[in-house]
Image 1 (cartoon, rainbow, N blue to C red):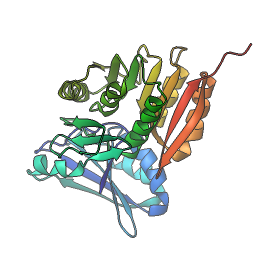
Image 2 (cartoon, helix red, strand yellow; image 1 turned 30 degrees about the vertical axis):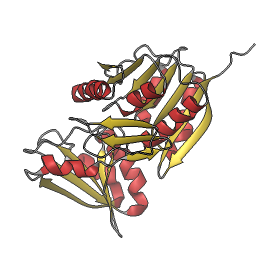
Image 3 (cartoon, rainbow, N blue to C red; image 1 turned 90 degrees about the vertical axis):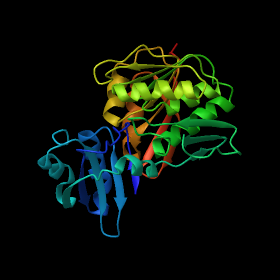
Image 4 (spheres, helix red, strand yellow; image 1 turned 135 degrees about the vertical axis):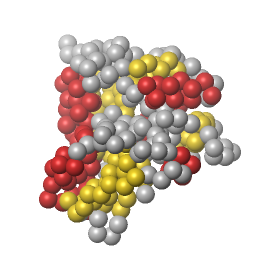
Length: 291
């Protein structure tokens, strides 16, 4: 079982929480996931069986997508939709989803896990009320690209983290040399978690609440954006000329070409693409103006 967020998911409280699950045929899992991400941008949980893939969404009664919307998302691949109430001991069991993640010389771990003695850089994260300790493929891909920039001597100056969640990427960026670092997220628990995690890791990250669907804040020359594809496309359309280097992810591999073209129209050229499973990340650089 794996948490598959494209954005940080609200942490599950111990009472009055429902798990709404959609099972679909494996051959249509990628399509169903893309549709569900639109309905639940906070993220979904994934479980794979021999004949099905199950995606689950958590939330209080009345705040989850309607069953007809889930049926429409699954389409002809739908196998089953189920709804169950989460037991009272979830507040303890949710920690089982988070394990240390090693990306090159960097280790991201939850605060309750032991340190990795072989890691040169360590980021210890308490998700608080926001899921996110670096385990998702898109986060790992972003970390890999940030490390490549650092190894090339480019980790200097200001950095903006769009969709900061619990602050994993912002804190890692600060630890490899970027300063000042500002992280934006539309969820207040994420902003609070990012600020607390930065302080606990001994780095400065300014965490700011912003609705990225409606506004693009002032961007630094370097930007990391781990968001859904629709949000990335929206940001590309309103990018401006300030960013010189961007690391973008949160997108499915099949969406990468479209996102790359959109940023290309905004003056950012794809210089590298990484992928893991169904997910992809892009390194974009500002194109030289034509003579």
